[in-house]
Amino acid sequence: VAVAMASRSVLFEEGVLEATHGCLIGKQSPPCVGLVIGKREVGARDFVLALVPFPEAWNDEDDGEVAGRPVCKNIKPPAASGAAVVLNREMLLEHVTQVTRMLCGGLSVVGVYCFASDASFKSASPALTRVAIEAKEDCVRLDESHTTKRGVDVEQLIIHLSAENVRKVSVKRARRSVLAHAPAPVEVGFGKVMDSFVAATTSYKCELELVIDSTAVTKKKTIRQYARQVLEHEAARIEKSVVLLENELWHDDTPVSAVPKSNQCVNAEDKNFNVNSGVNDSPFSLRAEFLVPGAALPVDDEVKKTPDGNRTGDVESGNTDVVTVILFGTLTCSAYAYGREPVSRLVDDLKRDVVRSLRARLEFLCDECDADASGAHVLSDDARVGATSTSSTSAKNKIELNLPRRAFAGWTKGLKICDYLLAGETEVDVKQRCSDVWGLTVGVGDVVVAEGKGVGNRGFAGDAKPKIQKEKQTPKEKESDSDSGMRKNLESSPSYVTYVLGAAGAAMLSLGLAGLAMTQNPECVGETCAALAGG
Image 1 (cartoon, rainbow, N blue to C red):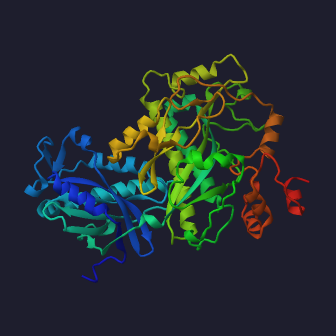
Image 2 (cartoon, rainbow, N blue to C red):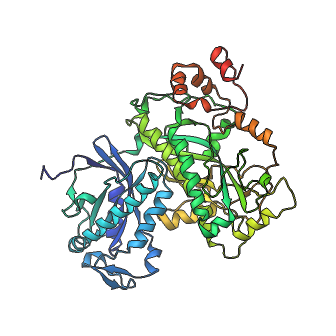
Image 3 (cartoon, rainbow, N blue to C red):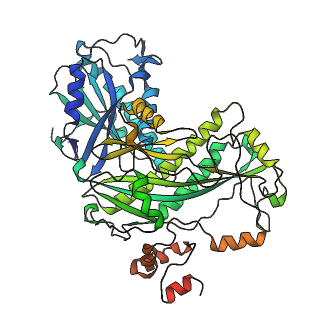
């Protein structure tokens, strides 16, 4: 037994397992499955924070399978009677996708649970294990699509809640590479895990430019492919960025709990950050700032540049088949860490949350465009034609949109889950989705929209008409803006002075981050600042 046992144990949040198991037995529920939410590889342990049931309403949509045979789901005998476990592979994979999208950084689906009799679980275990691993592989593939990491042998926890005895629970660990063998049992413990959690929040300013060739959209590339391209480019910038916690750069091995919380605001925009983010109700939270490399737009194969630097589809070139879609947003992002985890892991989880949040918003935008059969969507073929035939020369070929906004809802013990608001949606829609996907009852007052409604007259994803666009610039003005107007997330903050003048700042400059720019110079002295300002 000692040889087969996995090296890491599993620590359950106190009361989570007992509450779910006791409720299912008390109600004499039919066999069911659900997802296990937690945090993986915290030292020699995995944490389990919550069990999320599979949406009961989804079970009525179509039939599932038991050992490859169709089964009618209207008949639901109690699990204790030995009823078979019904698995709907496609719906379970979809549930994992939606739950993962609503999780903040640092948390993930770490496994599945099954409430059934011993005999039924034994019969369903191989199929359940395969589905759990497939779902996790899909999530990992998305999270690492912008990196060089490939082929990770993911693992999942398989938890059996016995329908015959409330004290009988088995926890095993399964991997793709050892599917031919029985899952390995693991040691189990219980404790107040979330009492030691720390939240880190950040506000990431984003401006993405999609240069869409209308002729290529129908022939070669879709809107989704354009969005994927710009996402990969922005994700690379995020991956290379340096992250400050409470205005300081910390050594990678520093425990998260050792980072003291600062009471001062970084700039005027941060004065309302805690109120608007809605993610600072946890016992201990930190503010993070991103120092990102300068932006450089990728050049699409279908949209080449002319010798003078203009794209062939720009207004200046006279090509009306190309539409430039500019997406704006200030992304409020959050990640959770155990107090003993190193700062490096918290930073990685926060970066992953920024990328995941941006991906979700772009996917919603593409889904709306694909689902709109009327052609009224701002990015549909008809709307793009309208954008190119506008009477205003300065607005020609330009569409500006604000990205969907992120909202946070209270979950458990100060932790939050998130959702996204499309055009016309309110906190009530977030409440309904929390109920549908998580089985979670959330009051409207417990939902906080973390981001504002946008700037000026820009539209939102889902709007039917293009909004006001940027005025046409001369080539000389474009060259000037390119030299001095790089995209930034920090602007003029005291931490930037530390970044420029400190020893750590010198190291970062040597790494190629000198391309960062500010709208106004911070108050600083010395040759370094003078050189940076061009003096």
